[in-house]
Image (tube, rainbow over the protein chains, first blue to last red):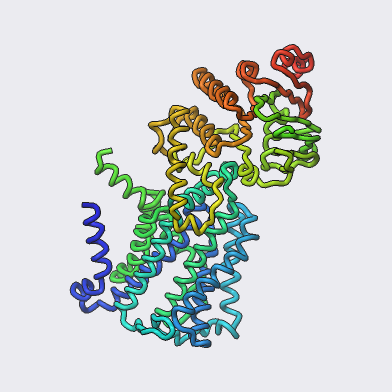
Amino acid sequence: MRRASALAFIVMVVAAPWLVAAAVPRQQRYVLHVLIFTALFAALALSYDLVVGHVGSLSLAHPAFFGVGAYAAAILATRARWPFLADLLAAVLAAAVVAALVGVPLFRLTEHAFAVGTLGLALVASIVANNWVEVTRGPLCITGIPKPVLGLPGGPTLAVTTLPGYYWLALAALAAVVLLYRRLTTFRLGRAFHAVRDNEPLAGAAGIDPLKYRLLAFTIGAALAGGVGALYVHYLSVMCPEEMTVALTVNLLVIVFLGGVGSLRGVLVGAVLFTALPEVLRLAPTWRLVIYGGLLLLVVVRSPEGIESLLRRASGARAGR
Amino acid sequence: MALLEVRGLVKRFLGVTAVDQVDLAVEPGELVSLIGPNGSGKTTLFNCVTGYLAADHGRVLFRGRDLTHVAPHRVARLGVARTFQQVSVFPRLSALENLLVFLQQHQEEHTLARLIRTPRLRRLEVEAVERARRLLDLVGLTDKADAAAGSLSYGQRKLLAFAAALMPDPDLLLLDEPAAAVNPTMINQMKSHILALHRQGKTVLLVEHNMEVVMDISQRVVVLDHGQKIAEGSPDAIRRDARVIEAYFGR
């Protein structure tokens, strides 16, 4: 029964472009656009949750890694005319390298100092994006980023030009992130991450090197954020410094902490709710932000541990526990 | 050769000398207790031995290997296990997972292998689960295997932490007040666990305030006062030692 409903859900998600076309033909493009953003934000939020949820380090630097990936892809695709998969890979690696380099000194800081240090990194990255005009074109933005073309050199290629095509690409990326997230957060790696998060001195006594696992989660989280950045700029075809401001951190914090920190389902639900909801509320433009703010407050007051804890309580009640 | 040797260890905190020129040797298979009034430097000594604090002077040798500036996780992997005075578990992991986490790091393996979950790793994991279940049986927590460690009672967490320390089959076990703040039944339970380990040939160094436990099970007792070693000997000799009596009861 559970398996069947999960399968039905997956079929529905994959078939969403057709369902949307049938249900709201006049707003098909807009709804698909929202779905693409939701998938990309879900992937980004999961990469962020690897750090804040699973090793318990409150990093505020995620926009910097997203931005490094986005700019790497944008620059390589426009100036060096690299193929899509190559610039995607470069974006992932660039973000990972930056994270590994800054991670070593940053993790010498603990808790609040670490958060402030990573906030500093995010601000520096944003300032560099604005002012290193020779490379990033600053506020003029990098434009004309081509649509992604899938395929390896010499083989057949597939250009992703339509909105449904891009939706499936974003969905495939999200699926890859979900699989990696699950691999990383369960079994031996997951246990080591959680041990470091829950009790660092005891983790040491268990033979776990806290720095190693913190750096690992931080670097992989950054690498995935860089990849999402590349997908993002190929979708929008433009990259501007505003895409990587602290506002992005606030979005991620809302998704992860109100969705359910450290929980796959919670973060996914959070991403759907807090990416799609503001868009849906556009239908009531005057009250949009008021309603959104009210809902945020409601979640914080009613369920400070996030929506995931509500879901867990509901399923627990149904199971008669 | 002594399994653990501490030579002239000094640790100062802002001018207070918490451990002052302490020498200590523990032979393989010995059961030694470290006692002393509150603040006499017992836990500080433990922390210096296990890499949680860097000693200001002196050396710590384990199997002749210098541990003085070795990080806690490396000390642990060399075969030195320790428990903490404040009961320490991973509250959000289940009791079973708490034990598993204590063994896996001792099995050298590549991070990538963990990600892929190689057949070898899966086999090790099955063995680890078996061992963990045996240890849960040993301390009487069989039916708590899947309960979050944070939901266990104080005494149960203490037993869990003890079982976790045994998971990697350590050569040297440092126990920080295993009998403190638990009920008499559990004290007896703990005592018999420690004695059983001793009979198996494990080397145990114990910090304990409960004199009954110390005098009952130790082969040798070392007494610290104000960071200095003031006496060392058999439980009987320590009981009669004038300096020890003075340290505990005053003049």
